[in-house]
Image (cartoon, rainbow, N blue to C red; front, side):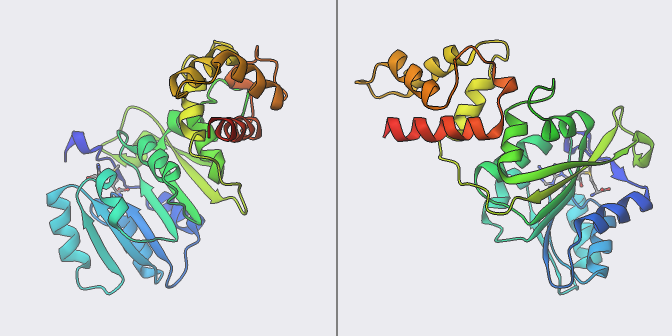
Length: 264
Ligand code: SAM
């Protein structure tokens, strides 16, 4: 077992089955399984006729997985760090994973930002990451990560999973998270993602200051950043004194769209 790979095995069989049930993948669907470890979830998936593309980094587990599932037609393994390998791994309909604590949020953010979206995802993450993923405007956990998740998915918390459901037991509780892709969600301009990060960078600052700074850092000269900031805020119906933590997804989408149009 290697601590650096965040290896805590979900030994509670009932929870494992529940997570696979909620994912709802059926015969012939392709599921990306992140960090299969010794393959307990993999077995559940293959038994349901699902095509599994598993991503594993640990050479010892890779050997075991090949021995256990190498002969099964529905199984393939992508070896190495999933943060690097996923881009070349083809398509998937669903994603499932008891995500290693050190890469969970970054991995989800990369997938969404780079447009690799799934019909549904069911993941287990640290409770704190789950709270941020599902947070609504005005709450303490609302962040650029909440917006990123909401830009593509409806996110709902599933069950809390106590440390004792894992081996070895981590110090913190985990939580299941359910992501359902939003139908017909608007495509956000490329500037949306750096913009939400910039506007949340220092939570207590007013939006006009952060937007001004963002525009000044991106303008190719010629524009008056102050005037442009005022104009964009007005177009989006904002006074400028608001803080990012109270603004909803639609407002951030409008800001990004207006900014993109004006900076072209
Ligand atoms: N799926 C198993 C379970 O639920 O019991 C194991 C989950 S364990 C929390 C995380 C798994 O992800 C381990 O198998 C670990 O080796 C693997 N892992 C950690 N970092 C990884 C990475 N960057 N890329 C791919 N797999 C990784």
